Length: 395
Image (cartoon, rainbow, N blue to C red; front, side, top):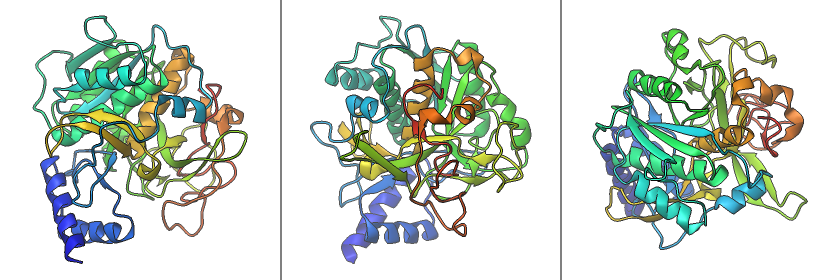
């Protein structure tokens, strides 16, 4: 019991160092989680009102520190391509923007290790594939933050895994405030992104009805992670102008696909308190916007390999990540693979092309009376939307 409590304190200090304070209630929740699995912890701390937290979880050691290894141990690009039946070509001329907060000073060098390890073509500033800017498009970067740096490494690696021929634009917001992140999204659109991935969110608020305009960029696929705290809706995933991306547990299986998926219990879902329902969303359980639209792997226990060298504990190495922060850049990259974002009407295509998705029909992310809003069912459900990619046809 003393060891478990010590691990909670380590995680609490880790989260505080990543930009958020941990309350007594959250320490108690962490203790309960550790007693059940003791496997992973959120990367970013609890965000203040008006700000967002990143939606990634990292596997941890018994001490609570991120569990780095000498080589990759999670799902790799070939695994993800196989699981989602994606092409190994495509994306030439497309740009995926990654929007996150604060600076990752090692972003480009860490990305180079990931790509070279898996035989992906180099993506560097020198060859014109990689570009890093601040939220106004300049090169005076914000202060570094270890938690958000891990998020950035995760996002860059997932975009590379799915669309290695795409260019990558990293836009770093000055802080994790909604205002600064929204400005970064607008900059990504202005600088020519075809798809924009956002792996963060926070509690809904009444002014989001106005603020969601920053995510309304017709002809650009804007993806947002649905959350990592289970049943409940966050912004900007609630926006009617984005593709809200939920999460699954992805496991190998002896079937034709080679994999099977269930709802990840951390994926956000439910009914928005403020945002109107899009015309293409017809489920009956929410009068307003329902989250999510689509999903991909997010369970840290079936997580993905990421290379990162800017961590709380110093040094670097291979880590295993989960959270809907994994799923959002995967789906953004699938959009980029298709090369037809200019014809998109926000998330409508994943509702009109459901046959090109893997339906996720089991698992739950919380208590909602057995409703489809928190339970995997045949057809549409909250945690996984219409399903996960089965090729690029739905995008």
